[in-house]
Length: 153
Image (cartoon, one colour):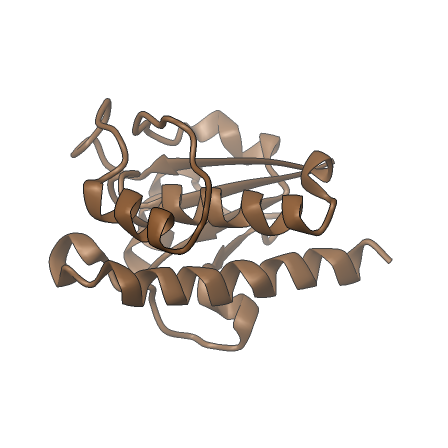
C-alpha cells in the first residue's frame, strides 16, 4: 500500500481537495484499496476547521465525493510514515524543511511536478478561484497516480 500525504498552508483548501481528488481517481480505476491518503497543514492558522466552503463547492461541481474533514498540523514523525509527501507550493516545501529537518529519501515534491510543471498551485484562500485550483489539483493528482502506477510495474 502506498501512503500519500498532501500538504498545504492551512489544510482547508488545497490539500484536502487533493486528498479527495486522488482518492476519487484511485477508486475510479479500481485501485482505492492500494492507497492510504491523508492531508495536513504546515501552520496552525486553521487547525480544527472543516474544508473551506469554496473547496467543498468545487468538489461537488466536479462530482468528487468527499468525507468530513478537520484541518490538522503535520508532525515531524510523519516523515517516516508516508511514501509521498506532496506540497502545493514552495512555501510548503520550506515549512516542511523546518518541520522534518531534511528530506533524505526524496519524498517531498510539489504537486504540479507530477504533470511536468514547476509552478505552485495557487491558494484559493487568496485568489478566490477554486475552479482554477481544482483544475491544477486534478492535473497534478492524475500525474501523481500515473507516476505511482509506473513505479509499481
